[in-house]
Every structure is written in structure tokens, then in C-alpha cells.
Image (cartoon, rainbow, N blue to C red):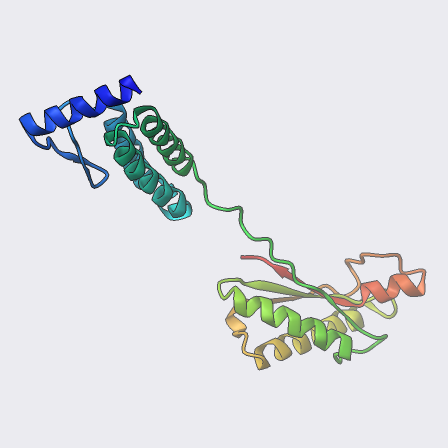
Length: 217
């Protein structure tokens, strides 16, 4: 109690004799002698504002500023230890903000579409899949994608190359009809040369009759 009264007495005396010496965080100083922690806190906040934290953690910087202001008010209200603790917390927040990094890149996943034997027309399930892909592409207008057509191993190489081209063309036409610019679509046809499953089984062949849709840029 005596220490607090002494602090208040000193502040009032200096205020009467010298007036206000300046301000920190928008709070007027009550003495010409200001603790180093005031300028250290100001410097920490200023450094954070010049860092990536200004973009990625602005809320932390705003909170550090508010805490610094309250800390100064508390200090000059003769609650010295409490005010210093608040200034220390403000510096800690500012340092955390300064270390903020951009969030990791978003992973974009696009689903493939599948076809019946010797067919290139889009099945209802394929249309539903493409509609979902259209939504993702419209939400990410800078993406460029590759449409890669494939077949199972039934038939000749030349026939399957043409079939995979027709499948790719149908997918491309559907996407453009839904507002995806053709300039964002790259197409390639592999025929039966790149299976993802065994062609000896019905299930494996079904997996190979596909158009893969991948983000390339």
C-alpha cells in the first residue's frame, strides 16, 4: 500500500512540475522518465506491422496495440507491475504476429469420370461429377486442368485412341457449356496405353475406361 501511494505521489509531483513529456500508444506519459519497456513495446508492434503479420495476422497486431494502450494506462494509474505485465504480453503478441506465415496452399481435388464399354457419352453419374468439378473450377478461376482420355484393352490401338479422344472431347464440351473457358482446358488421349487396373477383370476394365481430370497450373 505504501509503495502504491508513493508511486502515485511521485507521478502527481512530476506531473505538476514538468507536465506531460509525450505519449505512447495514444496514452499521455505522466513523467519525463518513461520505462524502456514502453519503447520496446512500440518497436515490437512497429516491426510486426512491417512484416507478413500485417497481412496474415492483423488481429494479433490490433490486439497487441490495444493491450499496450491498456498497459500504459494501467502503469500510469500506479498499478506498475500490472501495467508492465500487460506491456510484456503486448510484445509477445507482436512477436507472434511478426512470425505469421501464409497459410499452406489449398489442395484442389477433381474427380475423374467413367464410361461404358465402347461408349463416349456421359452417364448421369459422370455429369454429376463434372458439375462438382465445375463448381471447384469456378471457385478457383486461375486453375488450368488437363483432361486425359483412356480406354480398357478391348480393341485395337487405333480404335482405342480415337475412343479416348471422343471421351475427352465430350468432357471438354460439357465443361465449356457450363462456363469454363476452353483456354483453361488441356486435352490428351492415351487410348489403352496407361491402365490403372488389370484388364483381365470386368472391374479392372471399368476403372480403365475413364477421363482423368488433373490440375496442372
